[in-house]
Image (cartoon, rainbow, N blue to C red):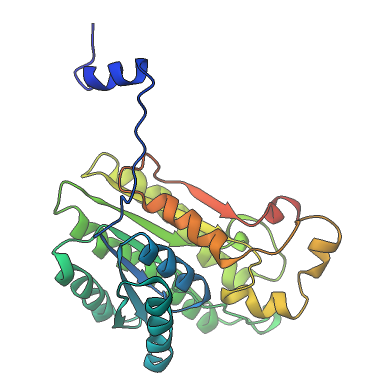
Length: 275
């Protein structure tokens, strides 16, 4: 007896070793990238441009910096980076981001949210206000934007893919990182809840990428100051992470025909396993 959910044509293809791997699958598709003008987000913008996708890069307030990133990426990779301003802590920004993305082709295929704050407050100086601010930036804003993006994606049969950015500190145990790590770990649990909640609905997927000590992004200052040198010296990792490492991981999860949801892809060279 043959399952009614299995295509006999596909079964024959597999028996004939006729495997089909998508090429240029993001070409012409709109991908919203809040925080895309930052060190890690810019690498994803470059990868999207090289594949013919249509990236919409969100930035909070520094228009001059955003324009500079846009101009340099377009000159090197071609295509167009569309810019949209908005602080994810403000609810009206969510609507503005979705509208800016959907007005280009009428649909939204992906969201990769790079927005975050290092929340560098020592444990001794930790206050309720500091914790609330970190949660607002690192958890509440990204989750509510993911909700808005999902509502838009579910309007079409193609669905879409949502990728949130956590951190190795959100999956591993690093002392004195509570103010930053707690909301980042909350993203991981929220991702799993939403993946289960949305399972089977309009091909909607949500996953998390957790970068480690990278030479760009929020870890750049710590890496540059030598904070993580010991991990390379003692062989815990062979090198520091690069922005391309994170971009490739996010791109994998943005694949339109992906079969992955509710997962955390840790891109830290294994550091969180040994720290």
